Image (cartoon, rainbow, N blue to C red):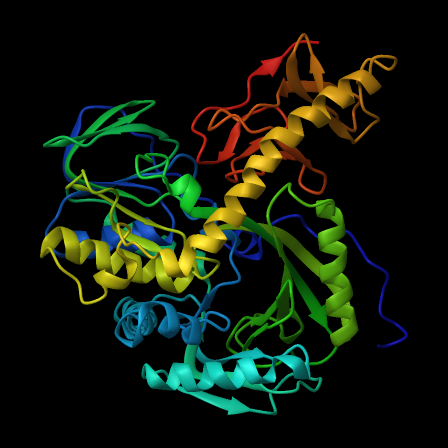
Length: 522
């Protein structure tokens, strides 16, 4: 590394995508609306479904609880790729070659869909075709990499084995997918939203959906009134309307990203490795020389994926580990932005896209993208629109939410739910012990710190901010009763069981919870 590399400086705790685009200001819903399709969620899945449905002649209403494209979609690495780590050998062995091919075709079609829309509407979103690499973190992983090349080729993907990459360090070997893509997701989707809104279709912000009556027609209950629709798409990160046990069939994981400036030009291409946890990299802008200033070309680097709240490493340490990886492999000049992202992984590693449950004919879901939502979320929007308009899709079988895959998922299903159950019981023991320990101090943490204690038999989350104000909230997640954990880097309360997040004052940041943590007076 260069001797003049500066010490770690506090980066902006903001997603690069949010920092480089304007805020939106769509009106909230005001009640009394009848449309063809109501879409709950204003991220890439919801907006992709909405634009396809609108173009088919359907009147749509997108209902976003906060601001569109600010949640998961606004905190992505922004890769458009059918290369999802080392996946295809697993898909073929567990689902068969035909369904693995459906998965591949859906993701390749999604990349082409974004490219077509960018070209047709001249959307300035830094879209560029580029190669994607998953490289072996050690020689021990080379056999898995070679097997993945063979499997990907068998389902028609542009895969090859390479021993050299554009990275400034050697790798034992890698699988390369040609003609994948990178883009700026908010620039793309804000343009899509403008096309959706108007002429009988709507984008509503600050409108939280609370429940769905899946009748005929359907009724979406929101905090501002009801929307009546023939069909409903649930495009929230986790389906808040859950009568099919999604809470037990997929599980949250959080990852961390840095946007860094390096000495020299960031390497072309997109990267993922086989380490545990894996690392991820891509440059921004994707197109060399498209930034206003050559020095503004940044490298996005990150990883440290883990189940939120179930491991002892604090969030701040996760960021430090990402920084250490960046400095080990690149000549880092500065760290400009840092942000985290949450996603959900199905127990069989394939997203759920289709009818939300076997007893409901007109409510659909797209969820569980396993960290690859830019591509598969786009595919989900296309697939769901096809199901609503024509009743079929060539990719429907592999993503069917009603699928039964005991061979592919039973072991992981048991393991993941055992962790959730262990957290549920263990947290209550810890909160009891914490309350006993805190009796002498009143349970008030030091400045900038937080803890969960039990008072009058109720677990409380207590945080003392930098101004010495003490905030106390119920520590019980309203979704299914798990105890929340403190996220020290982002000053939030996070649920380790199903991924809901809350501000230090208890307001919902992301679901599946639709209610906040009750604020308590001490």
